[in-house]
Amino acid sequence: MAHFLIEIQVKGKPNQEVMADYRAFLARITQERALLLAGTLKTPGRALAIVKAASAEAAEALYSEAPTAKHGIVNFTVTEIALSYGIAVGLDGD
Image (cartoon, rainbow, N blue to C red; front, side, top):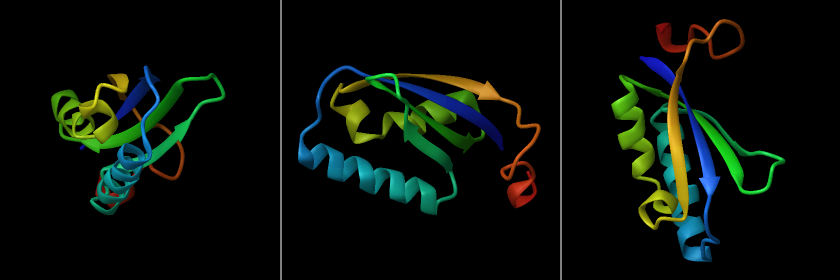
């Protein structure tokens, strides 16, 4: 498995239902051990996630399932990263 940075740019304001669905999505992919980290940046309208996936295409497909992406509320890019140090290095025998 490889690791990918999902850089998120918020285009609009989601309603409460979409945000509840988004939190459920994040909980699901965390439980599936695909999501290592997600959070907002101090720069308004920006967020990130770090996910594990077999390929960049798989990471893009995974994040395309996010309710915020499905509703066109966010744009995102996927960039492969090589982990060198930190807790996530070597998890699950990667």
